[in-house]
Image (cartoon, rainbow, N blue to C red; front, side):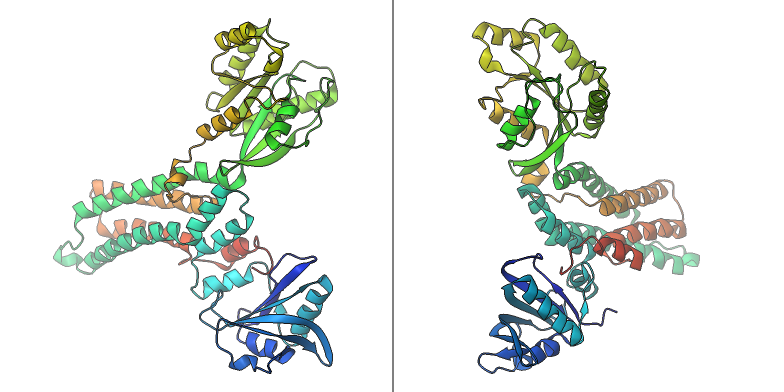
Length: 461
């Protein structure tokens, strides 16, 4: 199946200025040449790699389009095979006519992610780099883009490869000892081995811990905006998003469901969730919304508690008690407390809020006062130190799972060294750890694993 010549649209479907149709496989150049007529009568098969040629795609006596054809010869191509890229005009009709022509000439349609799968199978990328390609395509803020680029360049792979190589060297020495078991010799220095194991555990735990940051950066950090009805949650959302996205009304209980939207703050994606107000109610629909509010707080990384400073200036103690209830219910979750509508208050009233409510942010969602301070506070809550230092950050659940299994096996090796476990039993645990390292970079794969990974890619990549 991987010997077939495949074809797919490499640019988004639909109309555009241009579209790119990609072919890869042993017959890619021959098939393209049979349908291409160069303006200067060049023979496409005789052209050097990494060259571009102007001409027409011809179907019998019918000219389909004027195109540019790029030639990439193996092994110096994305997939490691012969690759042709046809840049044609972006009419969906033209795209399909050219693709159908190539199919009739011997290509088959590429499966999702098949170009990148071939790049992996041909040694152009390891598995974690291949997965980073999909992350790069889906990145929608500076942080997720930076992480994907670092991983695609092999930052994560190289860390794992170094650890795996050092562990493999010691594993070889342990295995060698087994061949000389009767002579009672030690080739592997146990002190050096202990130091290596400690270092591996340290690195693995750092990578595992980074997943907490990496996962939310990749998917957007969920922030629940909660509070009593009609305190300005929807207005705040609009101020943050700088557009009218949520329903705003003076009627209490307008927001009956959760509304989500995402913006980038300082290069980090935040997914703001405007929830139904929290209050006692007999309205069945609204009570369902309030139940969802608590569910959204559970799912969020950060909670914003918003109250109407103008209406609660005489009941601030009740507001403080309500805030403490949320803090006690979710002690591990960062909580930002915001007094909204301060444009309606005088200096004495503002001072009263500051003395009654601890760490309160003063805001006017209507005028935009305090919005910048809020965005700065949100950024401070997110640990982006590793991102700023360009450290490896794990964002992939499969990698995270393999790292957890690897550290478990390495800890068994550590325990074995401390208790004087025999070399043959040590070797079993080391092999298991090496197996999980190999799962990450692709030294060890199964068809099911590859199928699951590349099924999530877009066609044409």
